[in-house]
Image (cartoon, rainbow, N blue to C red):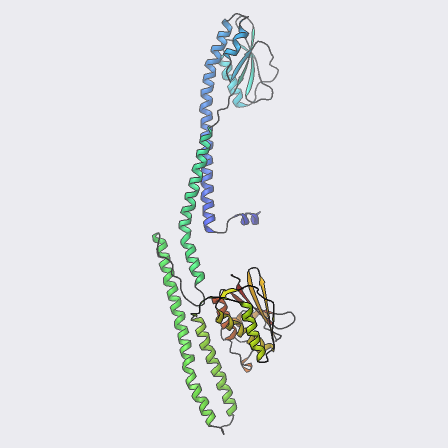
Length: 437
């Protein structure tokens, strides 16, 4: 039962507050309607009973004074919607048990005095009418059928209350919308603050509380962007400045041919140079790109990349097709795919690229036949400078930045990058991009 209620409850704050407000007003309107209806029925019933008392007493008194032969002719003239007369009949049912009908019958019986009521019973199975037998002055019987005429509330009252409820519901929805719209703007701005760290300024307009929240959020975005940009600038500066002494050291080693272990020094310096270069590239990635989003033929791009690797003798295959263009940044996407394929070739000796369309997304899988990665480290290897020592160590040339750069670029494209170990062995890097036309 609880799960059913959770599914029925709206998920958005706007819908929940609007639903609570509308339900509250609906219950209040219903109680008001019931109170008006009850009060109206009671007032009209009192008015009807007082009228019946006078009318039926006057009619019976007139019938009693008429000659016996003329009484039947006067009955149609004396009848009303709530009572009628007859000279023949019988009271075969018991007295009414319904409290309202019993009270009505007793009021009518009291109004007929001094004519005695000989019998009183409910009319058939009806709960709104009674049959009475009384005796006139000359001893003749007279049968009266008295009815409780309903006094409904006018239709326009119901429509008026329904119209009021609709107007109040509309105003409640508008009021809640005005309150929750700034929250939607804040959430949208938070979602748009991606890896490029370009803040989206939220409009500082509306009530004082909303303006204060928007101003604080904008300041927070600026501070975050400033701190991270400063860190990236420090990383880029250090990486850039290290290239000069590394180059000088490489030149000195080249001039010292008779130096013991010169080749090992050259290898260490080359590893340092590669690490510094990748650090610069990673810093540039985090600082964002000015590349414009363009319409791209993804199938043509993948064929071009695969052909480039084939020209160098690298075993790279392509399977599947998108069949439609996408809007993305071509150079960023090419760099992502290049990093994934290079990673597959380095640790798996081959790369198999599979392209498919799935649930409104384009999925590009780059598979290798390497040793794979322990399950508990699949997410960690997407972080910068993280290496799996058992399979991807410094001896293989890994710096821990290739997958991190691909991960950051995929986020900047509105996509996701996930790693999975294949059942048949090896690693599968899955890049998922929005398939927008």
